[in-house]
Image (cartoon, rainbow, N blue to C red):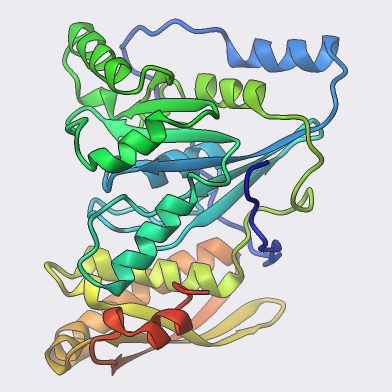
Length: 340
């Protein structure tokens, strides 16, 4: 029996964004209609309840978080075009009367340069130990031999592995896709291949249907109204961190961490005080900007998205503090939730 998470779900009472379905595009990949599969199983096969952990792994910047959000149907993970956007392991839970799917988005696999990245890698490696189904995500430009050791471990897994080749909307022909599929089938011979475009919602429904088919019989692991294992404060920090990634360049956003010090929720409003930590005094000045212009922009953008997330009026206060070399300090990483 595979190792299970000991975490308990935390109900936040929040209302996350709803993803809008996007148009399909013209690559022809014919699979069974997922709606027919699900309806037939429900109507003709009175089976026991199914539940399982579906862990999403792969290298940085291949679209794991976009895929996670599309599979869950809610914006659980933040998304930017920059690598290493995801730092934590984040669960998104899908419930129906017949099954519960516990998806996990994980940080991209990398060679650690400091203790924070060591913790991120542990999240990714841990995802191999407790999955019922593994989604290995790549894209159309990635070298199949990148992070070879990790991929070798995936190849040896005895659980179902679904190889998701994402971003196929960037390909120009079916011939390119066929060649790519053959290359990856050689690398992961036991995996089932699903060419997709998470951004365009292409072939996602077929992937969902196969996941449901592969789920083992099990009672639910979380309450049937649970959406995630993370508390409300976590999503506030992630939204603010997303705006830092989008508004600053080079090493600046990677040197930041966000901690919510006050989260005072009332019926129609939330008062939030959050601290942005940086590693050097010079970074503090860059974050604040001339006359506070840059930090004000981050605050406005974050507040707007937090209001959408909770569907409430938000009063957001941001502060910037220096915590020297926090990415290499175990006590700080524990305080920020990277070490348990």
